[in-house]
Image 1 (cartoon, one colour):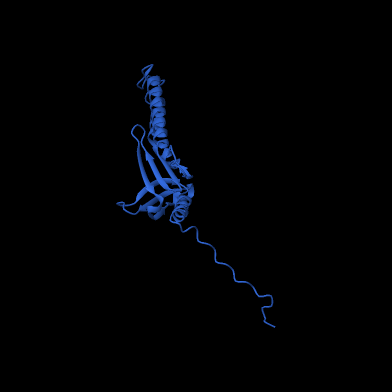
Image 2 (cartoon, helix red, strand yellow):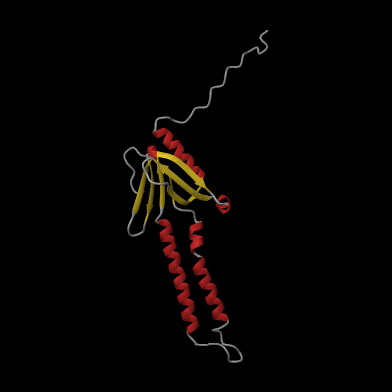
Length: 184
C-alpha cells in the first residue's frame, strides 16, 4: 500500500511466502538439468565418432537455456513482489498486478471472520492461507501463502476489536486475599 489514510497506522505488510518462488522454479531447473544431460550425452562428441556433434550447437543451447531460466527467475520474482498484503488499524488491503494494479480493500470494522489454514509443510516453513470474511461481501477473501498466518489473524482480531470500540478484553481482576484465611 503506497499511501496511508490520515490517522491510519501500519500494523503488518508482507508479500507471499518465499515458497511460492521455489515452486515456480521447478520448470527452469528441469530445463537446465535436461540441457546438461543432453550436452554431455547426445551432443558430446564420442571417441567412436557417434553422437550428434555440431560445434556451436552445445554453446547456443546452453546459453539459451540459461538465459531462459534467468528470464523466468526475473518474471517470478517480479510477480512475487507485485503481491502485497497490508493490515492497518483501519483496513486490510490486497494489492496484485505488475502492469495493471488491482487493489481489494476490506474495512477492518466489517470483518466478521478470519480463518487460517496450514498444511504440514506450511506449519514447518511458516506459511498458510488466511480467509477473511467481511459483512456485505460474497465469499471470503483469500490471502494465500501468507507468512505467519496466525499472527496476521490475531492482529486482524485485535484491530477489529479496537475499531469497534470494544478494546481488548481485560484480564479478570484477582479477588483480594484475606490477611488471615482461617478467619481466627
